[in-house]
Image (cartoon, rainbow, N blue to C red; front, side, top):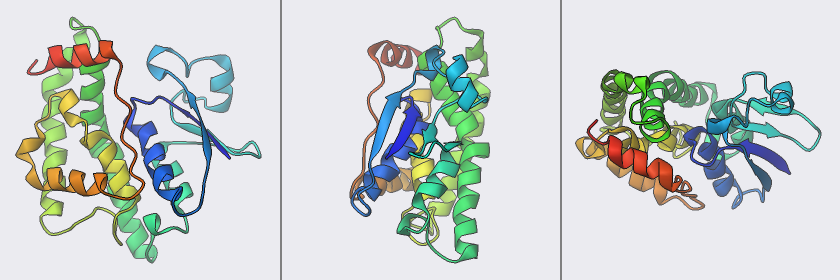
Length: 219
């Protein structure tokens, strides 16, 4: 049994639900989910910070009390020895390179734009950052589009954890003001991910966040 502390609207947290949905069909893995609303301070409590001083989600705890943080590290650990992180050392490193791309060139722009649109007031000064975030996020989507012109997946040996990592915030990029219709190869890849056995969709965001997202479109 693995305990996951996660915030359901978070793409970084949803990555784990996705992989465990697939692994459930392979290894019978089970987990317990503790909803941890990082947007409203649940990761800043003394108890949480004692386990994860960085104060973020997701965080997992194993039955023997070990703790692991950082979504892509958790993906690599969960998928070790499975087809979702397969191949030789070179191929696995290529998979990891896309996961580093996701965290350094994709998530900081696409995920942050989504957060600003859906979790900050319409008069928040952070909204001044949206044009720059959208510019950089579109650059990341263009890199993905180019790769997919000659590759079916981002993981080296077939669908795997690099695809899960990139799917998490790409599939909801429109929440941050991105237009996925401009990236047909990316859109087709998203459909292929959704068609995988054991796929788990992200839970819908709360009504108040949806209202902010609608009001932010084009802003």
